[in-house]
Amino acid sequence: MTLSEELSWRGFVNQTTYGQLSDIDHEPITFYWGVDPSASSMTIGNLAIAMMVRHFLDYGHKAVLLVGGATGMIGDPDGKKQERDLLTPEKLVANKKGIASQYKTIFADKQFELVDNYEWFQSINYLDFLRDIGKHVSMTQMLSRDFVQSRIGEGGDGISYAEFSYSLIQGYDFLHLYRNHGVTLQLAGADQWGNSISGVHLVRKLEAAEAHVWTAPLIVNKATGMKFGKSEGGAIWLDESLTSPYQYYQFWLNVDDQSGEDLIKIYTLLDKSTIEDIIAEHRVNPGARLLQKTLAREATSLIHGVDRCHAVERVTTVLFGGEPIDSLNTSQIEILAQEISTQPLNQSLQNSLVAAGAAASQSDARRLIAGGAISVNHAKVTENIVIEKTALIKKGKNTYILVR
Image (cartoon, rainbow, N blue to C red; front, side, top):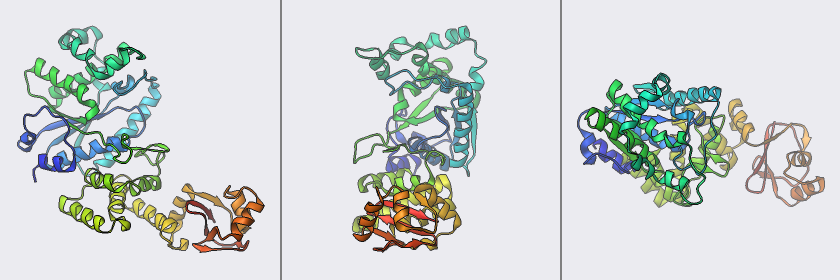
């Protein structure tokens, strides 16, 4: 399978400036992909493009990965209805470190060059930039951008000159990387098409050279029609301090069947034959949830490592699969303790329920216990016992209390 065939099958083709998709299948290409440090972590929306980058690397192309220290000072206005709040210099530095660290995690076994566009923008003279770059950029083209029209049109909140200039700044990145690193291709998500085209125009106009863009579609949750990567609690982050490995694993485990068939192609490195076998087996027995379990395992292992993934899998089987809690080791118990309410040993079941907020009062707790609504270690309990060793209390379908 060629790279263009791989990308097409996995769903990584949206728009491109190449005449034929197969144009990427010939000589090695030096490309770049950039992430602005608007936060200290990428989300799984960013991860989708990172997975596309992995395939380019696997097929022998060379990557320059950019942390947008300069563009991050302004913030990409595309898709935003209001002006962004500016980040402090200290926050930008911390965010850049977070993004750079995640590049190293995602591409741990790959060669790439890491750059920061602040390195070249900090020394640029404003008048020189207007004369040498701004002179060659069409205002008509910039004004026609959808996000600009939505901000300056009737009912719009307006747009500052800084945010309006974002596309020009990103375009210069492409020109600089072409001149200094031999970059001829930018990879991006569909929402970056306009910004990326700015760079293509600059390279072609000022260097009389070929430059191209390849974008992947934005991932949409087919069940809801919403942009993928959000949950009721907000974005799904790659940083475990923002989205725990357990929560990360659970997100993938709970995707719907229809979305899962697309997502396993995007978010795993499993080959075509393996994925097609998994999908076929899942369709025969969807109740076994092989598709979701495989997706969750592969996606979690990629970001949090195989050992951490195994730990959250074990915790999941105890919570939802009926496995005994004493099958967990100490580190796995700690993972569980971070996700559910905990209570100390040697207090009554009734007191544990009230203290954890699972029962509104002592009388409510007595009613729940007597009515068979409470289980301890997956066995129904109808008496107010004292729990003397590590145990898992369950109320109804989804309320858990860890006693330890």
